[in-house]
Image (cartoon, rainbow, N blue to C red; front, side):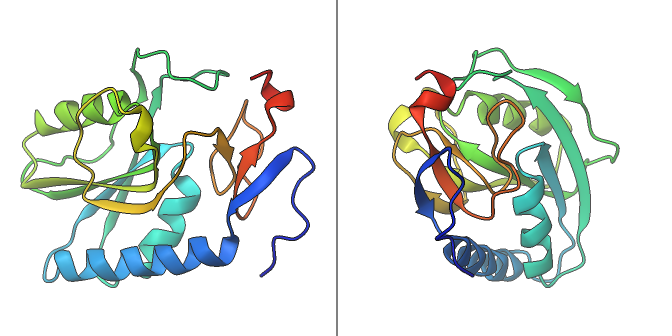
Amino acid sequence: MTDTLAHPDIEQVLISSDAVQARVDELGALITGAYAGRAPILIGVLKGAVVFMTDLVRAIHLPVELDFMAVSSYGNSTETSGIVRITKDLDATIEGRDVLLVEDIVDSGMTLKYLRQYLERRDPASLRICTLLDKQVVRKADVTVEYTGFQIPDRFVVGYGLDYAERYRNLPYIGILKKSVYGG
């Protein structure tokens, strides 16, 4: 697969679609090994993690269950507001279950810290986090991420599920969005 025909709003393709797929396969193998003999429930954080989680679940060779949560902390901004609202809660019960929370990107860490604490109150057997992208340079909250796809610079990225104002989610790669698009 080639990413030479990048979207005109993309300044630079940061991670090619081939690199993304290879890393998702590696993460799937790591998770398969870590949960051997168990059937974890993967909880995707909507909407951004849906593309990543769809590919990730196909790379995990175990029986798994899927559920989703939706949270809001960005709106149409490029920075988190710091206020986390749950707009869709789980359908499944996670008490006594092995839970893998799947996120598209960790930047400030505030949303994941909130979600970890929220889910831990439901008494899972274990709770781990898997993220496709990690922007450690802007971390404001201490949160442990057990599985990380890529460390990235502090740039506003879109593609492979990540959006700006609900656009660009369908790009097959991770790209840096031109500042002229969002007024940054």
